[in-house]
Image 1 (tube, rainbow, N blue to C red):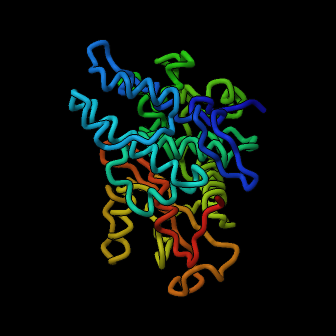
Image 2 (spheres, one colour; image 1 turned 90 degrees about the horizontal axis):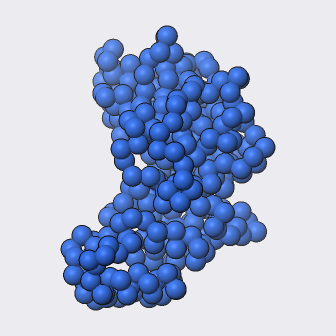
Amino acid sequence: MSDFWLSCGHHLLDRQEAGGLVLTDDFLKAYLARPELIPPPDACPVERTLHAALLADPRMPIASKDIAAIADKDARENWQMLIGFRDHLLQHRTIEAAYIDLVRRGVGRTPPLFVNQLVHVILRNALDGVTDARVLRAAEMFFRTQRVAIHEGSLIAADEETVSGGAQPPVSPLVSMMGLPPEAEIDVISDDNVTTYWERSDRFDMALDLTSGREGLMALAEAMRLWIAHLLGLATTIEPVAELHEAPLTWYVGLDAEATRLGNMMWTGEPLDEVSEGRVVGLFRLKCRDESIVLEKVGGEPVYLILAMTADKLIRMKPQNFVTGLPIKYPETVA
């Protein structure tokens, strides 16, 4: 087995004995390498001084007045967001604990890019030792938007940024540093090419078959199980369900905004038309192995997880909904 997802920066972090990721100066310095934060030639002396000082000591206290003195408005906003995010990470023992606290309190002004980066690196930690590349490819859906298409009767999900030609900035500054190619060919992961995933994992150029009854949805179920186990310390079983009408929604978690909307319709008894049903990509049944931690109102019934695509065939998964939406009494982190 080879390493994977080097671009997330997990090798820049330390790991505590309990398994959580511990913040390091090198990880913080990677954010300072972002194009938005490298002072341009015409940057004011205050911004250049601030950037140089943080490269020397990325944990140094930064007061709001220090940022307010920067001449450029856009630069001030970028620095405010970065320092706010950095300070949040510094307040917690692990990256996992920082992420859980962030999503429970509400991400506020934290850029979605930063939230996705946390998911990326936490998943890399949670999936350490996984040998099934399909599980790793399915887990990419947690932090990268997918575009869905029907190809020869199969439901195929491909990385949106990759298929659109890489017009968006890289998810991680390390992608640019590593010299990864901006364009790549797309292959559907299969028995014939699954072993190539390891060498190309940072290119996000392998598509996943999410057709009901096939390995893609089972791989996604396993990725979700491992995410929940690592982040919340919960032992669960998760399995795909074939038909939407088979699910009595005593409790459900929408895994994206569209899925939540559809789940709300079903919860209130509103029938789904053919178009709405067609947007459901996956339905999963979750059971906690220790039922004593599940809220009594669930009544021993399974929790259903819904994944859907938007009208323009995009999947924007929200893994934070596992933290905020599961009906458990005493959610704890592993940190």
